Image 1 (cartoon, rainbow, N blue to C red):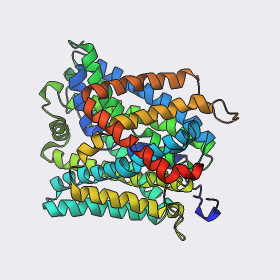
Image 2: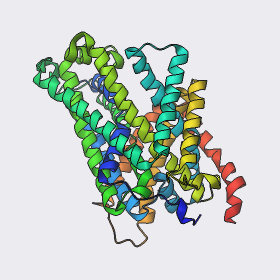
Image 3: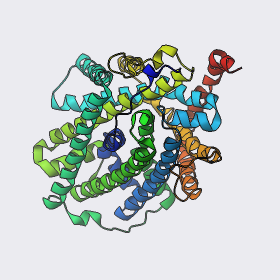
Image 4: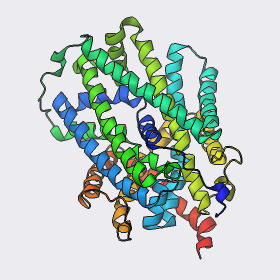
Length: 436
């Protein structure tokens, strides 16, 4: 499509890009993941090692995505980079997966997860929970449709509130003297099976960082993307590392790892240690704020992939038409919100999403690997530091994560790949003929 009226406006700055990355990645997992990781690795030292290794992996990938975004500063993110490196069929498979399963599934998961914490604060009936979850998706989708600037302003506010609250918990937790530094002992303990311990921690940390790449979906709306996107990716990953390490430390200070029976009780115990009997409600409110920002970010970033697919002729052409007044991809947003609402009504979508975690990681690894192909084309802009070491580090660690995921859930991994591959006949039947 060449209609200039359907080209997204560049109106986001560096701050919005960082807010999107941090706001989207940090959800409820920050209150649940540290407990499982701490119990898996067995000591503060190895927990710190896992966080730093996975941070290095995420930063390596982010630096690679920075170059890809600089070379192709348009909406779509991984979809665009896969298209440029490997062609439209592979890019379509990625878009097929995120459109039909991943984006609406995660949107539904966050909405339902947030509702369970709202229910803890204000009891809701079963029908009320469903209505609240769907209502949240519809309202936040509406905010994004009403204008990218309105959505970005709300996202910045929620991200600042989220990060500020976490910073308060860290500072108040340590300075308030409500914990015990003895909980960090023994600091250098080595678990009986170091490989198994680190394997569990690495998978947890990988998914804690997962999603940093999604900010590239808005590359078509970020001002000076050649400069701002690489900066946003690097700054965002560093911020995530600081937040994860500091919150893990304060949680361990507040609650002895040995007394943790589950991830959920860990969060409740930390809340009670900080705020007394009302700690559970305080933490529930913090989780609601956190997930609200993530939900808004997903409804902002997701539709840009379907919009990009439509512009390439790989989806309904009308999806690439922007709202005449608000200049947003409103039809793509409506599709994501509608599919999410259907999944909320249907229930049982959590297991469906789990089938595609392996495939998502494969696509991200392929995207970074595509840099080796794209690098052969001349470009005078931002270049990935320490290339080719940077993408090699990311791909190597990601391959190890893929192995661990496949070992844990081999059937799910195989089925997820098979379902995604079903998109190939769809591509060649409906769209491949156009290429001939």
